[in-house]
Image 1: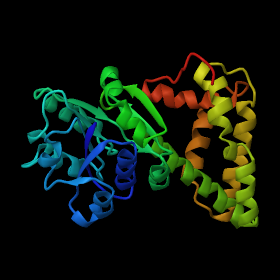
Image 2: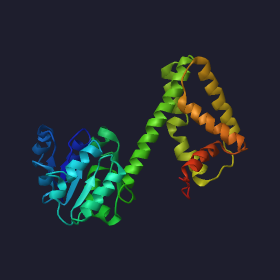
Image 3: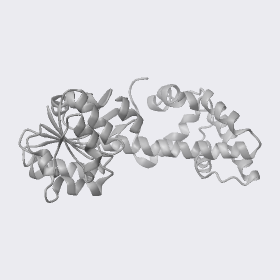
Image 4: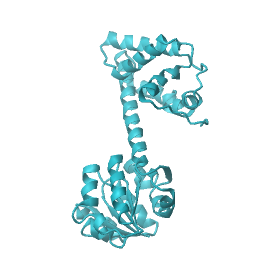
Length: 300
């Protein structure tokens, strides 16, 4: 295929390199022409504007910092919308606002152009080795149409729903990851201040349940995701542990906002008489507030 690629940054550039290596013809553009020097040396064609990239391409990809960069590249003067032709496909790899990618889909559809949002997980390192997970939102037939291009950039291409679903999944995942990082560091600072050697503590976290992603891969699929709260680890015991941890934090003067929020939810679940249920039952309070349940219907 003839593939256009706009946004040759830390992740976009190695993704573009993978497209060349897969044998596709690559047309590139970036605000910094020198960013494309090595790609041009590998056979890529430089284009002077996004519209010029889009002209004659089967697929046009963008990989940009965010919504404020994507909108003018697509819709601005000299944007890709001016160059794309009916039957071509726009693929946005930006971690973008779902509302914007859906609006772009609707606008490009008037030109006979299909849209996919396809943010990636794996970072710069994964882009260099093609060890990326690509989360693709859009029509399944369009995904299959451009799969050779998507597969050239990522080892795992997941079709996750309609346009916008890719960005929803990526945002939810990243938000969870950063929140988990803060929760771990909250608890690590508590342990270090209580006298544990940091190197030993990190080894403990790596070897115990968190380091093995036990909750995500084993415990929650068997409990919350099934709606099965027969006790594996009772809430009353988990609540006791959280109480001891937050009391220790208060004694040592360690701020633990996320831990305190979790402890508060456990206490509310206890007050509802759920102490003998599995500890994961306290997470249903969040489902209740959100008006959404996480039930997969199958384990694993």
